[in-house]
Structure formats: structure tokens, C-alpha cells
Image (cartoon, rainbow, N blue to C red; front, side):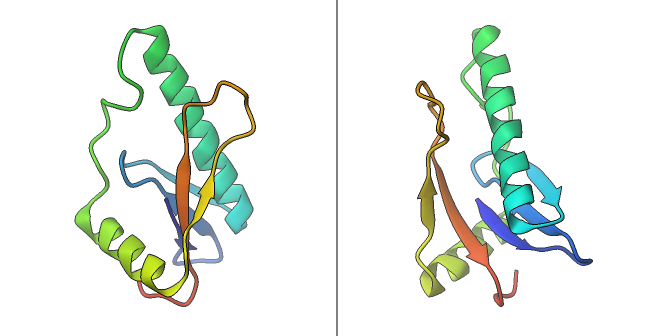
Length: 100
């Protein structure tokens, strides 16, 4: 995931392996929303006997490049949601002061 400022005062959390974007009024709000969207979609896919999130294409190369630039400046943080059976793990880069 890449977290960055929006064009206004918002924050954006962009998933990379699947092209999902969440917007929030703070970094934490955007990240929380994106994690919840990922969890809900993954659970929906499992209920329908599909591989979680497989129906989504990867984010555009520009997002991956921004993540790599950001990760080279500040070590990404690994997050695992607190649910005991969670299959989702996130590597988060905060793009503060880095051009997307």
C-alpha cells in the first residue's frame, strides 16, 4: 500500500496488488478504510469460492514506482489486521514529502 496526500486536504491509501483506492480525512482514516475494503472483498470472494482479490488488476505502474521511491527513503511498515484468522498482510509506505 502507498499512503499519500490527495490533491486537496485528503489522504489516499492505494493498494498495489489489486487496484483499490480509499480516501480519508487523515492517513489513519484512509488506511483503515482500505484495509476494511480489502477484508470485505476478500471474504466475499472466499464465500463465492474465488481466490481473494484475484478479480482485481494490479495498480498502475506509476503507483508501484511511487511505492518503490517511497520505500527507498523510509522503511515500509508491515501491518497485519488484529483478527485471528486474517489472511491479509500489508506493507505500507508513507509518501510524505515524496512526489507520486
